[in-house]
Length: 203
Image 1: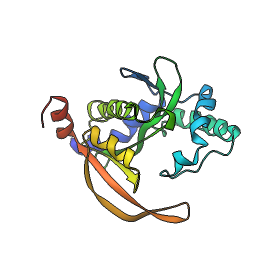
Image 2: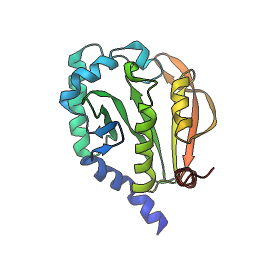
Image 3: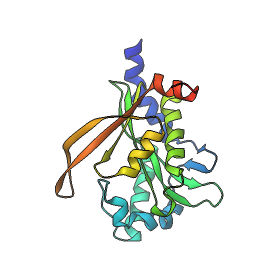
Image 4: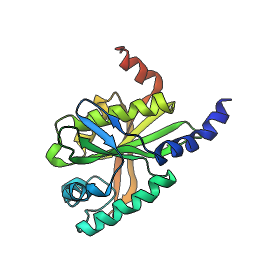
């Protein structure tokens, strides 16, 4: 029965994101990335400081951002893109993205990722968004484990993972080759029992 559930998990995730629901937190709305987000996304995606610790390069111009967002609309319909736009509830400004970067149904876990515009960092928005996504991962999909990774040096991202209850598992030396060099990454994770214990106020 458990194996049958695992085998259908990816299909369930795809169905969910093919009609991606809007989520809310105290200060944020997490919703589908839309064409109206072009200006806001380009505002931070063009910055080298934003992509320094990411696998993608700065967007060269607004046309690139527009084409990217347009491509996402098809991926949403196919259910193979798992990111929300992170939007400020009071102003409607899109300040980043947060969601699932990969799903492993055979082993019942997923990886999450997030990007927040530098202008809105150090305000707790990333932690707020990730916490809401973790709720979906564990309560909606029943994942046993959720993990996240950051490239060495991205201390701000590490702090978000820790605030969300994740524990550092280790460092993978020269784990990925990106932008013409090998990158070392740190791996963090939280298990379902740890997540539910934390939410109940346990250790």
